[in-house]
Length: 144
Image (tube, rainbow, N blue to C red):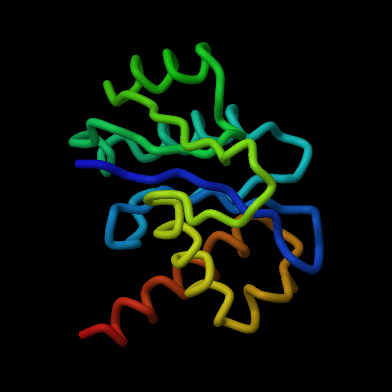
């Protein structure tokens, strides 16, 4: 199994960051909301540790350049036994669709269709996390 890991800062209020791990169909396997001062790598490690049971069969994790580093890769390897593959942007300053990265971006676009998530009204991390979970649940129910 392969998952993609990416973070996005909230659009209107820059206090929170959403970290999600989705499969190749864009469905979430792990969600973690953090404050803006926590680094991407430490947040991703914490998310993987919290969702060990959901990510137990993952063999490969595709990440963007914000998650680079040998220490990060070894922490993920020891936690769930998955390898890290970094997808970097090209050095040219032209628009190029990066392989597999659009899957995570599509999942964020699905989330931002919910008005309450597009403009962050929440003051607490747990409330923000529950709103993301509710949005994914409503998305899955609409697919049935």
